[in-house]
Length: 229
Image 1 (cartoon, rainbow, N blue to C red):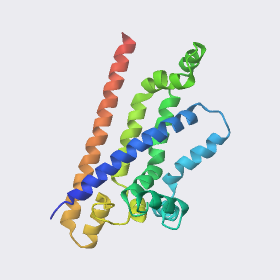
Image 2: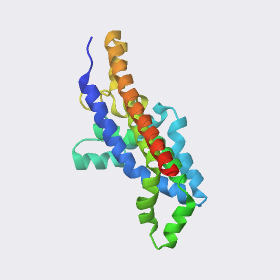
Image 3: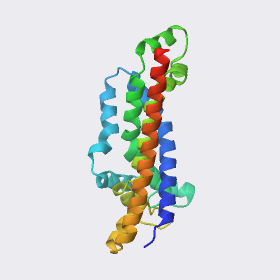
Image 4: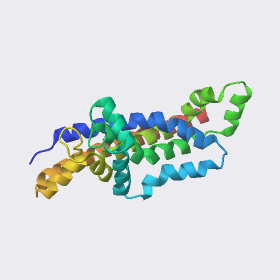
């Protein structure tokens, strides 16, 4: 019985990098979806939500074709870095970002839409730019929902399997995540290691989600107290 700590550390690093990338990508996209009235919004929202309904192996297959050595992206990346995107940690990050995109953008969009439009319009009338209004008004008011999106993204990335297996394979120390380590342990009939590693993943996810709910509860209490005052 043993836990593959290298896989645990690599999974945590992948979750951190993918979550950071999704914050950078997801915030502007969610802001656009929350404020635009263009007809293309429905199409963009559908594209963002696709990973929720597609089997992970389908998304992984297309990503493998897109990032593989025969694709322009794969060849270009290999020229720059000396190795391809497929079956590398960088490829895992790309796959995780695309697969977890709805878990970031949808909570972000809902949180930004919850901000009172009258406050936003008042800010614009006072001459504050849209971008400054976003950072100074919308983000501070919507941050509990934004935090929920960040935590959900991190927790979801911890448990990814199908996409990371298709794009990254099973390279120890490079693409071997916890979910793949658990699968390998079961395949080799090492149920004890699979059970202990699974328990560790469950505990980490439970702690992360519990901290999020505790923080959100405190925010609601503070908000109610401020309103009554």
